[in-house]
Image (cartoon, helix red, strand yellow):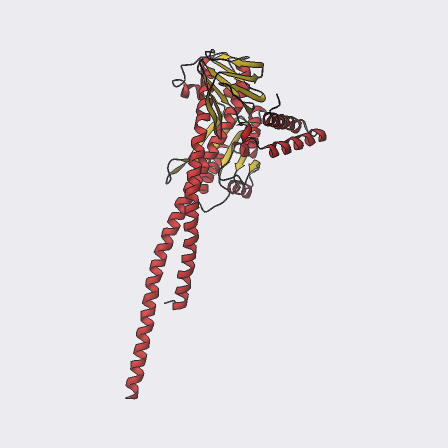
Length: 134
Length: 289
């Protein structure tokens, strides 16, 4: 079975570069499944988990937005932050979640509201990926 | 000639200073190593994002985004990256001199520019000169994560989107080698010259866009601009450590020279004192005869 090289890169360095059989990700326009031989494509991602299916095992990576670049034999995910479950700082994510929830309750200005919403999404996403909740 | 005790005191204090500068030199050397690694880790991300931006920018003629277009400049944003601490030779002074001169020469009133200061030295410099600092961030780690700068970067890019500023320049020290750093002035926004620069490199791929080019540019360009700011930051961090290392090395060398000179003076003074004592004894003895 043919494979895809998947690399996840962030400004702090590469997170992962391995061979997989299939990639599924949530793009802004909806769920995407990518198999080897896909036409070249670029799509923005939402704050979500990217699922990577390899031989037998599948992996998840939590991404905070960014985008996905597809070539027939290669998928590159460029995100401002991306973590494998083992790299997630659960305590921090939990605190971030509480902080964001508190801010949302306070309802200050619009910008803060938006920012808190995004922070909440990122925190929940990290926790979900960590806890295997899908 | 200074007294023996005075010279001794100076030798001792110089030795202690030397110990400190030597320690700082070694600390900076290891920080420089880490900073170089960080800069290397960032390369794949920046190359890839540049490649995609370039291929979209030149691939489809119909794609447009405010960040790609030049508009009339009413107000210019300046991001000035300095360090938090001094003792790094001319590192901060050269950046600030250049930025200050440019701002002075290009603008007549304070309404025409906004300063975004990264690093305490730069912030204090502009404050002292009564130039408003719009955004600031201090206390950045020696090995910054993208997370540390993300908020400032996205707020800065937002300024451009909101048309608060119509141009964005970054001033930072570019790391050339451990002994050379040069002041660099880069225009980040608008991104109108990107296509020409990268055109040859990424002509291979033409992409499908999901859902369309405009939406992708809306995500991609701010991310790209933020990554440029982060890139400048880690570059300047490497420069900072290199500059501090060099400054501390020359301080250590100077301390060595000073200690040599002082030891010579000390020995000479000691010899003079001994000679004088002997002369006195001989004089005293011959007076008794």
